[in-house]
Image (tube, rainbow, N blue to C red):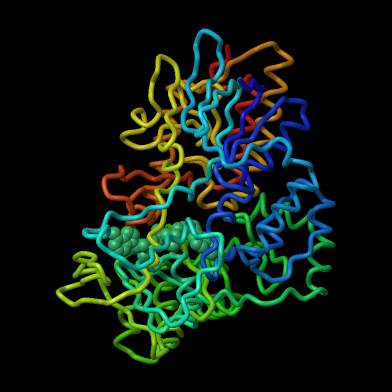
Length: 536
Ligand code: N01
């Protein structure tokens, strides 16, 4: 039976850093990973066109200046294969592989009050003991495949974007259906369309997407950014609402300007400039886009017009134009030729908003009495976000309390990091943290560093276990809801609100108070004798 100070669950960006950092601080540690390799999101999401939508210089580790100086990204937005190469490089460079057990899923984690330790069970039937459990299980890692009627009859191939096969999938000459039009679909549709004989896209809700404007990284620009890397990282933490700020390849201080205080001409010019820069830059145009309905409507109209310009057939264009929810309250998508793909002869858009998919048949699927013959179906239907991966593990705390039951009305955490009654169990990029709205790589480094300090303190003081108080947890949940209610987020049926999964409680699943405020709360808690926590 394995016995460790720390068990880390998951070997994606967050888990790898947790393993590295906590091992360096002298803890015996083992990381368990369900996949056969490292990478998490970037291991599983191998669908055609998968790439990051935050610039690679920013969507990468900052903990090692040598690492960030030596690694050379080939494109502005790294593709999945390059990100996986990077994570394998990090794994080997820091000698992490020897402490990772692959092809092993943690199926249960039970807290033993008598010993104050966690007993974990693996999919291989092993039992492992640990003092601390660090759940780096990802917030978009439990794929959602809706239970469409008749699916078992379908004889064609089925693919899930979030669980894509290891080997290349060839769509040449095939009739392919894609269900969903979120980020994953928007990246994969243009690539699949180039290969398939016929592509039919089944769209329930159109997304807002803007051109990524991806391309090879200019070595001069690479040198310029690297010369100021430390400063860039500081600004990402201190000033950038989402933890990213590169604009037109330049390090630009994020705006403090509000839409309300600008003229129509200034707004148009700013939106145009950001649109030209590509990627998620529009988030940064004004500070009040997510709280001021007029500002939001203006930006939405701007993007709607851009969509219309990109699609030749006005009827198809109108189907692709999002309506009825504020822009940016669902993740903005960044695409390469997404809308232009609908100008191809071999691509058809089927609106299933009012006429949902009736059922699958042996040879395809049926919508509104019309049969669509398909050889392959791609489910780009998203994830049971934030809570899904944790819910799938049988986690029991004090008195056998089940985490899944305790979270029936929505996740209960303090700082999106711990739950009362579950001592020494930590979530990295967890529910009600900033994971969904702040760069998760940076957030995970901050949380893991804090954890390292916390473990040192517990060790030095001979204290432990640690868990939050119910009062601190209640206050955190209230605060998350209050901040969300002051924004436009609750208006959208997004995964941020748990609204993409039927039956899931509709509550905000992320903290919208910004990173500086979030960090302050963590640091103040630690400085004040772990205020909000109970320490044994
Ligand atoms: O998932 P989604 P995703 N019948 O939930 C539809 C990150 N990400 O995998 O909106 C028919 O956005 C659903 O329709 P609706 C990023 O944070 C990042 O694309 O519920 N349709 C929607 O169109 C992103 O936000 C990157 O009406 C159904 C789609 O499926 C997050 O992951 C790339 C349905 C799901 O869209 C999730 O993105 C990819 C049903 N029963 C992902 N159920 C980058 O970094 C669902 N849908 C670029």
